[in-house]
Image 1 (cartoon, rainbow, N blue to C red):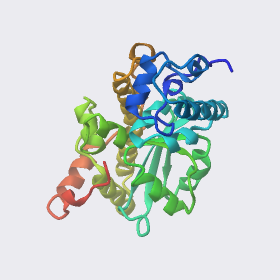
Image 2: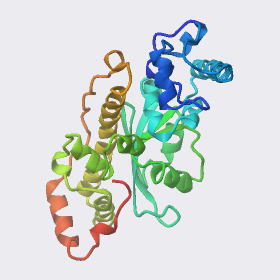
Image 3: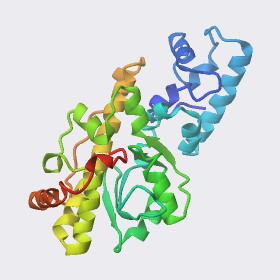
Length: 297
Protein backbone atom coordinates (compact mmCIF):
# COMPACT_ATOMS: atom_id res chain seq x y z
CA UNK A 1 0.00 0.00 0.00
CA UNK A 2 1.40 3.37 -1.04
CA UNK A 3 2.19 5.98 1.54
CA UNK A 4 -0.21 8.93 1.52
CA UNK A 5 1.32 12.39 1.31
CA UNK A 6 -1.28 13.77 3.72
CA UNK A 7 0.06 11.57 6.55
CA UNK A 8 2.03 13.56 9.06
CA UNK A 9 2.78 12.69 12.69
CA UNK A 10 0.26 9.88 12.93
CA UNK A 11 2.09 7.70 10.40
CA UNK A 12 5.22 8.07 12.56
CA UNK A 13 3.36 6.93 15.65
CA UNK A 14 3.83 3.53 17.31
CA UNK A 15 2.78 4.29 20.89
CA UNK A 16 -0.78 3.12 20.25
CA UNK A 17 0.56 -0.40 19.76
CA UNK A 18 0.52 -2.91 22.62
CA UNK A 19 3.89 -2.96 24.38
CA UNK A 20 5.29 0.10 22.57
CA UNK A 21 6.07 3.10 24.75
CA UNK A 22 8.17 6.20 24.22
CA UNK A 23 11.49 4.36 24.61
CA UNK A 24 10.79 1.64 22.04
CA UNK A 25 9.22 4.15 19.67
CA UNK A 26 12.41 6.21 19.73
CA UNK A 27 14.40 3.02 19.23
CA UNK A 28 12.36 2.27 16.13
CA UNK A 29 12.87 5.79 14.79
CA UNK A 30 16.63 5.70 15.37
CA UNK A 31 16.89 2.33 13.62
CA UNK A 32 15.22 3.68 10.49
CA UNK A 33 11.66 2.56 11.18
CA UNK A 34 10.32 6.10 11.09
CA UNK A 35 6.80 5.33 9.88
CA UNK A 36 4.32 2.49 9.39
CA UNK A 37 5.52 1.72 5.86
CA UNK A 38 9.15 1.22 6.86
CA UNK A 39 8.16 -2.05 8.56
CA UNK A 40 8.11 -3.56 5.08
CA UNK A 41 11.88 -3.22 5.14
CA UNK A 42 14.11 -5.52 7.26
CA UNK A 43 13.61 -4.49 10.91
CA UNK A 44 17.02 -3.67 12.36
CA UNK A 45 15.60 -2.60 15.72
CA UNK A 46 16.48 -4.97 18.54
CA UNK A 47 13.00 -6.41 18.95
CA UNK A 48 11.86 -9.98 19.44
CA UNK A 49 10.08 -11.80 16.58
CA UNK A 50 6.91 -11.74 18.73
CA UNK A 51 7.04 -7.95 19.12
CA UNK A 52 7.71 -7.51 15.40
CA UNK A 53 4.65 -9.67 14.72
CA UNK A 54 2.54 -7.44 16.99
CA UNK A 55 3.91 -4.37 15.24
CA UNK A 56 2.97 -5.72 11.81
CA UNK A 57 -0.54 -6.58 12.99
CA UNK A 58 -1.21 -3.15 14.50
CA UNK A 59 0.38 -1.30 11.58
CA UNK A 60 -1.99 -3.04 9.16
CA UNK A 61 -4.92 -2.11 11.41
CA UNK A 62 -3.61 1.46 11.66
CA UNK A 63 -3.43 1.91 7.90
CA UNK A 64 -6.90 0.40 7.45
CA UNK A 65 -8.43 2.69 10.09
CA UNK A 66 -6.75 5.76 8.69
CA UNK A 67 -7.95 4.90 5.20
CA UNK A 68 -11.52 4.64 6.53
CA UNK A 69 -11.12 7.98 8.37
CA UNK A 70 -11.60 6.49 11.84
CA UNK A 71 -9.81 8.62 14.46
CA UNK A 72 -11.59 6.76 17.30
CA UNK A 73 -9.33 3.78 16.66
CA UNK A 74 -6.26 5.85 17.54
CA UNK A 75 -7.81 7.92 20.33
CA UNK A 76 -8.95 4.74 22.08
CA UNK A 77 -5.42 3.28 22.01
CA UNK A 78 -3.23 6.34 22.65
CA UNK A 79 -2.72 7.83 26.11
CA UNK A 80 -4.62 11.06 26.64
CA UNK A 81 -1.45 13.16 26.60
CA UNK A 82 -0.55 11.66 23.22
CA UNK A 83 -3.79 12.61 21.44
CA UNK A 84 -1.99 15.59 19.90
CA UNK A 85 -0.75 13.13 17.27
CA UNK A 86 -4.23 13.07 15.72
CA UNK A 87 -4.36 16.80 15.07
CA UNK A 88 -2.74 17.27 11.67
CA UNK A 89 -4.31 14.26 9.99
CA UNK A 90 -7.87 14.92 11.12
CA UNK A 91 -7.78 18.71 11.23
CA UNK A 92 -10.35 19.05 8.43
CA UNK A 93 -12.81 16.87 10.38
CA UNK A 94 -12.18 18.57 13.73
CA UNK A 95 -14.13 21.09 15.81
CA UNK A 96 -13.15 23.10 18.90
CA UNK A 97 -15.93 23.14 21.48
CA UNK A 98 -16.81 24.86 24.75
CA UNK A 99 -20.02 25.13 26.77
CA UNK A 100 -21.33 27.57 29.34
CA UNK A 101 -23.82 26.45 31.98
CA UNK A 102 -25.87 27.65 34.95
CA UNK A 103 -23.79 25.46 37.29
CA UNK A 104 -21.51 22.46 37.53
CA UNK A 105 -23.98 19.61 38.03
CA UNK A 106 -25.56 18.46 34.76
CA UNK A 107 -28.48 16.86 36.60
CA UNK A 108 -29.63 20.16 38.14
CA UNK A 109 -28.31 22.84 35.77
CA UNK A 110 -28.68 23.82 32.14
CA UNK A 111 -26.44 24.61 29.22
CA UNK A 112 -26.79 28.29 28.39
CA UNK A 113 -24.56 28.64 25.34
CA UNK A 114 -22.30 26.43 23.24
CA UNK A 115 -19.61 27.70 20.87
CA UNK A 116 -17.85 25.71 18.16
CA UNK A 117 -15.09 26.60 15.71
CA UNK A 118 -13.73 24.31 13.00
CA UNK A 119 -10.91 26.56 11.84
CA UNK A 120 -13.18 28.27 9.31
CA UNK A 121 -16.66 28.66 10.72
CA UNK A 122 -17.81 29.90 14.13
CA UNK A 123 -21.15 28.57 15.34
CA UNK A 124 -22.97 29.37 18.56
CA UNK A 125 -26.06 27.96 20.23
CA UNK A 126 -28.26 29.70 22.79
CA UNK A 127 -30.70 28.16 25.23
CA UNK A 128 -34.24 29.13 24.26
CA UNK A 129 -33.20 29.89 20.67
CA UNK A 130 -31.28 27.28 18.70
CA UNK A 131 -29.65 25.01 21.32
CA UNK A 132 -31.39 21.87 20.05
CA UNK A 133 -29.65 22.30 16.69
CA UNK A 134 -26.30 21.53 18.30
CA UNK A 135 -26.56 17.72 18.39
CA UNK A 136 -27.24 17.40 14.66
CA UNK A 137 -24.44 19.86 13.84
CA UNK A 138 -21.79 18.24 16.04
CA UNK A 139 -22.28 14.87 14.33
CA UNK A 140 -20.74 16.33 11.15
CA UNK A 141 -17.30 16.13 12.79
CA UNK A 142 -14.94 13.25 13.52
CA UNK A 143 -12.92 14.85 16.35
CA UNK A 144 -13.83 17.26 19.16
CA UNK A 145 -11.16 19.37 20.89
CA UNK A 146 -11.84 20.80 24.37
CA UNK A 147 -10.07 21.92 27.50
CA UNK A 148 -11.21 19.78 30.44
CA UNK A 149 -14.05 18.49 28.28
CA UNK A 150 -13.49 14.90 29.33
CA UNK A 151 -14.46 15.81 32.89
CA UNK A 152 -16.96 18.60 32.23
CA UNK A 153 -18.19 19.60 28.75
CA UNK A 154 -18.79 16.20 27.18
CA UNK A 155 -20.45 14.50 30.20
CA UNK A 156 -22.61 17.62 30.68
CA UNK A 157 -23.65 17.59 27.02
CA UNK A 158 -24.44 13.87 27.08
CA UNK A 159 -26.55 14.22 30.24
CA UNK A 160 -28.30 17.38 29.08
CA UNK A 161 -29.21 16.08 25.62
CA UNK A 162 -29.65 12.46 26.78
CA UNK A 163 -27.33 11.16 24.08
CA UNK A 164 -23.86 9.67 23.62
CA UNK A 165 -21.28 11.45 21.48
CA UNK A 166 -19.43 8.74 19.59
CA UNK A 167 -16.74 11.12 18.40
CA UNK A 168 -12.98 11.06 19.03
CA UNK A 169 -12.00 13.60 21.65
CA UNK A 170 -8.76 15.51 22.25
CA UNK A 171 -8.72 17.08 25.71
CA UNK A 172 -5.99 19.71 25.72
CA UNK A 173 -5.84 19.71 29.50
CA UNK A 174 -3.83 16.47 29.47
CA UNK A 175 -1.53 17.53 26.65
CA UNK A 176 -0.77 20.93 28.17
CA UNK A 177 -0.27 19.40 31.62
CA UNK A 178 2.34 17.02 30.16
CA UNK A 179 4.11 20.12 28.80
CA UNK A 180 4.09 21.77 32.24
CA UNK A 181 1.12 24.12 31.79
CA UNK A 182 -1.78 24.26 34.25
CA UNK A 183 -4.08 26.67 36.05
CA UNK A 184 -7.09 26.00 33.88
CA UNK A 185 -7.65 27.22 30.34
CA UNK A 186 -7.01 30.87 31.25
CA UNK A 187 -3.84 29.97 33.14
CA UNK A 188 -2.48 28.09 30.13
CA UNK A 189 -3.35 31.01 27.87
CA UNK A 190 -1.54 33.50 30.11
CA UNK A 191 1.54 31.25 30.29
CA UNK A 192 1.64 31.03 26.50
CA UNK A 193 1.13 34.76 25.90
CA UNK A 194 -2.52 34.75 24.82
CA UNK A 195 -4.36 37.91 25.91
CA UNK A 196 -8.14 38.26 26.05
CA UNK A 197 -8.35 42.04 26.06
CA UNK A 198 -11.65 43.26 27.52
CA UNK A 199 -12.45 39.69 28.58
CA UNK A 200 -9.44 39.43 30.90
CA UNK A 201 -10.72 38.42 34.32
CA UNK A 202 -13.96 36.94 32.99
CA UNK A 203 -14.24 33.24 33.82
CA UNK A 204 -16.75 30.39 33.91
CA UNK A 205 -18.46 31.67 37.04
CA UNK A 206 -18.82 35.15 35.63
CA UNK A 207 -20.43 33.55 32.57
CA UNK A 208 -23.21 32.35 34.91
CA UNK A 209 -23.75 35.93 36.10
CA UNK A 210 -23.87 37.20 32.53
CA UNK A 211 -26.59 34.69 31.69
CA UNK A 212 -28.58 35.66 34.81
CA UNK A 213 -28.31 39.33 33.92
CA UNK A 214 -29.52 38.60 30.39
CA UNK A 215 -32.46 36.51 31.65
CA UNK A 216 -33.61 38.74 34.50
CA UNK A 217 -33.05 42.14 32.90
CA UNK A 218 -33.31 41.22 29.21
CA UNK A 219 -29.85 42.74 28.86
CA UNK A 220 -28.70 41.85 25.36
CA UNK A 221 -25.28 43.33 26.11
CA UNK A 222 -24.82 40.63 28.77
CA UNK A 223 -25.73 37.91 26.23
CA UNK A 224 -23.36 39.38 23.65
CA UNK A 225 -20.57 39.50 26.25
CA UNK A 226 -21.26 35.87 27.18
CA UNK A 227 -21.12 34.81 23.53
CA UNK A 228 -17.92 36.80 23.00
CA UNK A 229 -16.40 34.98 25.98
CA UNK A 230 -17.63 31.55 24.87
CA UNK A 231 -16.38 32.02 21.32
CA UNK A 232 -13.04 33.38 22.57
CA UNK A 233 -12.60 30.03 24.34
CA UNK A 234 -12.93 27.94 21.18
CA UNK A 235 -10.87 30.28 19.02
CA UNK A 236 -8.07 30.13 21.59
CA UNK A 237 -8.35 26.34 21.71
CA UNK A 238 -7.15 26.20 18.11
CA UNK A 239 -4.13 28.35 18.97
CA UNK A 240 -3.33 26.19 22.02
CA UNK A 241 -3.72 23.03 19.94
CA UNK A 242 -1.22 24.21 17.33
CA UNK A 243 1.22 25.51 19.96
CA UNK A 244 1.13 22.28 21.97
CA UNK A 245 1.43 20.19 18.79
CA UNK A 246 4.60 22.05 17.82
CA UNK A 247 6.02 21.79 21.35
CA UNK A 248 5.39 18.05 21.40
CA UNK A 249 7.12 17.68 18.03
CA UNK A 250 10.34 19.00 19.54
CA UNK A 251 10.75 15.66 21.32
CA UNK A 252 10.67 13.81 17.99
CA UNK A 253 12.91 13.76 14.89
CA UNK A 254 10.12 15.37 12.86
CA UNK A 255 9.92 18.94 14.13
CA UNK A 256 11.39 20.59 11.02
CA UNK A 257 9.12 18.71 8.62
CA UNK A 258 5.91 18.55 10.63
CA UNK A 259 5.64 21.86 12.52
CA UNK A 260 2.55 23.95 11.79
CA UNK A 261 2.28 27.76 11.39
CA UNK A 262 0.25 29.47 14.08
CA UNK A 263 -3.33 30.11 12.92
CA UNK A 264 -4.78 33.53 12.25
CA UNK A 265 -7.43 34.60 14.70
CA UNK A 266 -10.87 34.94 13.10
CA UNK A 267 -13.17 37.88 13.62
CA UNK A 268 -15.41 37.15 16.61
CA UNK A 269 -18.97 38.27 15.83
CA UNK A 270 -19.59 39.67 19.34
CA UNK A 271 -17.75 42.11 21.58
CA UNK A 272 -17.55 42.25 25.35
CA UNK A 273 -19.41 45.17 26.87
CA UNK A 274 -17.05 46.66 29.44
CA UNK A 275 -19.79 48.59 31.22
CA UNK A 276 -21.83 45.43 31.73
CA UNK A 277 -18.81 43.55 33.07
CA UNK A 278 -18.00 46.32 35.55
CA UNK A 279 -21.57 46.61 36.77
CA UNK A 280 -22.02 42.85 37.33
CA UNK A 281 -18.69 42.65 39.15
CA UNK A 282 -19.64 45.57 41.37
CA UNK A 283 -23.07 44.15 42.18
CA UNK A 284 -21.85 40.64 42.97
CA UNK A 285 -18.33 41.00 44.34
CA UNK A 286 -19.36 41.35 47.97
CA UNK A 287 -21.92 38.54 48.06
CA UNK A 288 -20.68 35.68 45.85
CA UNK A 289 -17.84 33.24 46.69
CA UNK A 290 -15.97 33.48 43.39
CA UNK A 291 -13.21 31.13 44.50
CA UNK A 292 -15.61 28.18 44.72
CA UNK A 293 -16.23 28.01 40.97
CA UNK A 294 -13.87 25.67 39.13
CA UNK A 295 -14.87 24.01 35.88
CA UNK A 296 -11.42 24.03 34.34
CA UNK A 297 -11.84 27.53 33.01
